[in-house]
Length: 180
Image (cartoon, rainbow, N blue to C red; front, side):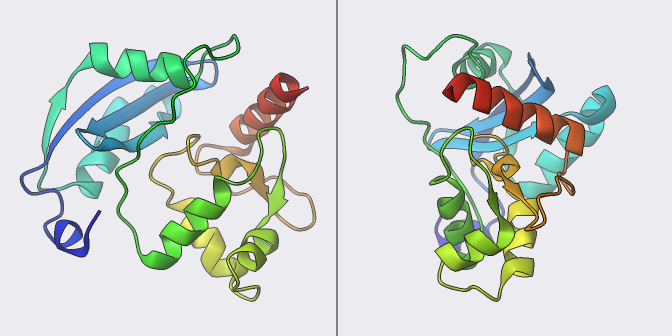
């Protein structure tokens, strides 16, 4: 997203969204013509709270429910068999340059692997900024596609995942099993 588009907070942008189920719970997905702009799990089946987060992220955008389009995207993301359609997903993200660099670094972590916040900070050339890295990871707008779940504390503890540590453990385990 350009700085001008960021400033407009989604004005003039049409976003299709929908809810679907994954092996890890209910999910809210939103897409623009340029790509996926929001992916997040729905906590405690509270769709209104999840939708509010989407609205807050894109306050000036026009949000249109399109379940058919979203169901196809969710099927591609969380398919249980190995992918036949391995085309990459296009993302439509808004964030600072630092956040974008952190999210890019997350994309380099292979499925089934984990790194620490310090590892990511070093990877982007700012080894002392692990707290800022943790903040950027915490606000990742497209959870799972940008694999924030693959980052843990240096001590090896799995905590502070936006959608719960149990879900994070399940995602890491599922990817590890699929990678084996």
